[in-house]
Image (tube, rainbow over all chains, first blue to last red; front, side, top):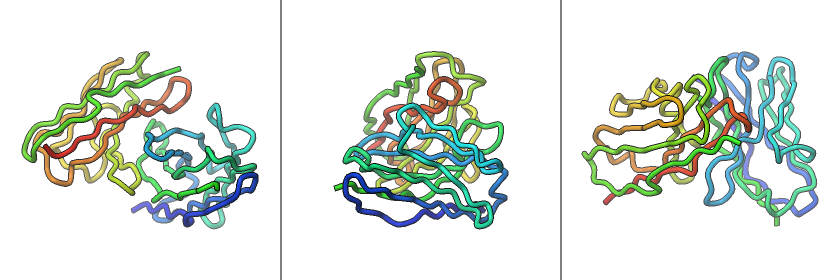
Length: 118
Length: 109
């Protein structure tokens, strides 16, 4: 059974950077795309983009270019989200979410990481 | 831009009742790539339905999805206490690649 375990909550000051990890187990890491989803307080989920875990090639949604960086380390089956130049409006819960090939949904999610910028 | 609209915003029902949730897309959803998720407070979303009508692994058969094109429905045949939550629909294929609806909250009457 797939498990996605994210790093813990983080409090950062505006202008700082943060790196969220998503460690996976129970499946072949490179056989699935990994997506990142943001959920601001009291709001619905918002897709940030995905990374091809086999090639390391990222795709960013509009509004998530420039300050956001997706990466993977296949040796430890882990995906990363780095956010640079943090702003107060980046305060949200960030989820990693696995996408099966040839499907348009997320069948397994991390537990979420709360990033607070204050 | 593909926009999803969900109705109603809140559905107040009693355990044992039938819940019918609607999701409407501003443009036709590619290959019926329409999914439904359940989210409880403090938890990650959980996949319920994918491909408009296929139940995800471990999802009980009281959950069913239907629809095509721009109109989709999630039905919970008999509400159990653990079903009270927020439900989101999500489409894949139109720009942006993935979009979520605003959600329908199913709460206890």
